[in-house]
Image (cartoon, rainbow, N blue to C red; front, side, top):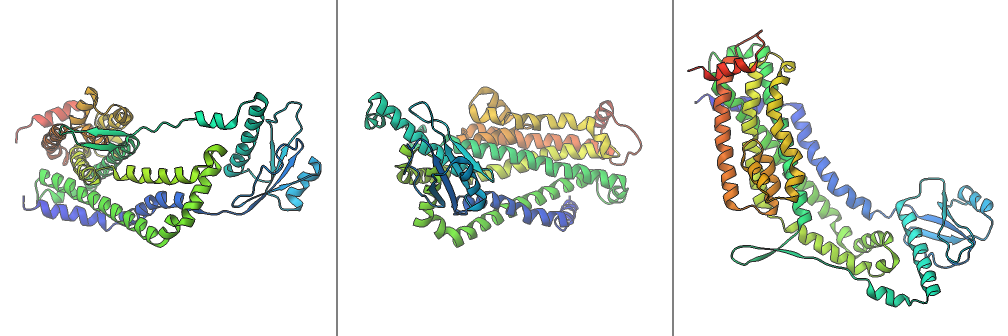
Length: 444
């Protein structure tokens, strides 16, 4: 057993020195940080000022389109043909044409532009016309607008979880869904990513006859275990570097641009952009509601027990990987090339794919009997339990899942070791399930 650390070090150092490892280690955090930073930058960018001409034949919208940040509305009194020329001759971004209508309320508008109009522009125009049309209809019906506003009600639901001791904690289902889905998907991705590395590494050493030299000094089981653990450490190293580098990039960005994002100017900009897409009667109170929404969003993000989630993520990543890596290693030892692995890979990958498919069901029914069983069966528990944990899982369920996963890893490693020991030095023979069963029954 003293040779296993040497094999682990070899597998680990060989892979962390590869250019592909270094590229993905640094490229991954940049991409993940970009997913957080870019939407914030886009939301706070002022954009290019836009001048919009308004040709209103009805005369009902005179003075209704007020200038906003980066949007300037100019009334035009010419005919439509002459107004269209302004798009090219006078640098107008768009032309809004409201034709005369036979009815009392104009409901049609036409936007002419050299480019596809942005959502901000169409949303602002639509909201102004909608508000004016509603006021005209209310006036025609004799209904007071203030009465209509007073009957509109917003329902706010706040959920709390109560434990057996009676302690109440605020819960946010949406955040739990996102964390659960992301955790389960990442477990699935990492198991496949590093499990296939074990498979390809075994096939490569076997096809190059390198393994014949190695097994002259170490036992096949030691070689298999060292390879599995070494690649596991590679995956753990890469994951921890991703977390630290991503957090560092986001923190540095916040330190440099945090004042612009959270200062009064930044808040006003964010609120203005948000209010443009709201109906006018809601946009009037947009400042306070937007700040309240930001506070609720921050509270929701902090509601997750991140140390618990991260700790179990690392365990289920390692446990799930070790279980499946042993199976991948046995498949690699049983075949001569990667094309022959398909018949053996299907039974191995079905539980993983089932776990990925069931994530949506888990986040909607985290306490159902089917989810309970899937979260303790070792072949599906890494994905399913990771999706359950953000919703709160009884400690008994988590302990049972951990014990069974460890037992499953030991059992699959023992079975894979028997297959690996026989198949690693066998060449030129097409192996089937009957042959594998014979290898499992061999006595050492």
